[in-house]
Length: 167
Image 1 (cartoon, rainbow, N blue to C red):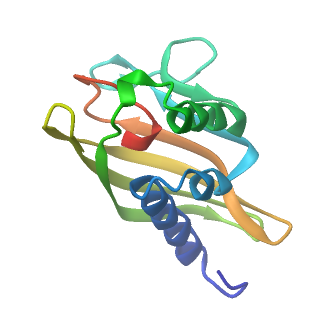
Image 2: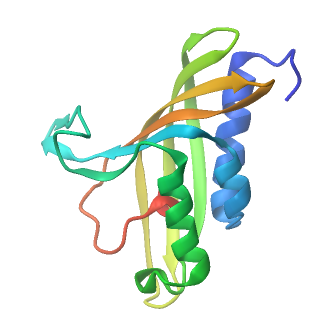
């Protein structure tokens, strides 16, 4: 992305590159989109219309306070130690409704809607997950990366494994 790109173009570029990396199982490319201290959070639902607000005080579907947790998940997938993910589902990630909330010279906060369609080759199950996300991007050393991503999963009654490649 050029230095002259607008905040909206930067967010769109990062989110679309993330979606493509997940679909293509380009794990190194996916991880490279996150800062080392990035927070990745998928809150659980506290009630029918309210999600938890503090990952340190309530159970989350996924919570990693740094990229290290994401790296460990990727390592399990790459090493094929995650038996529940064998074989990995085929996915198509769709991103839309990108809205800027705040944009500064070194930080951008935005939200978007997303849908992930998946096909499970082992069981021939097909399905989708959908929701919204909030993302904060930070520019460090001239490079924009994800500093925080919260994924609000709307259909959280999951019949099978739920992991990063399905969100």
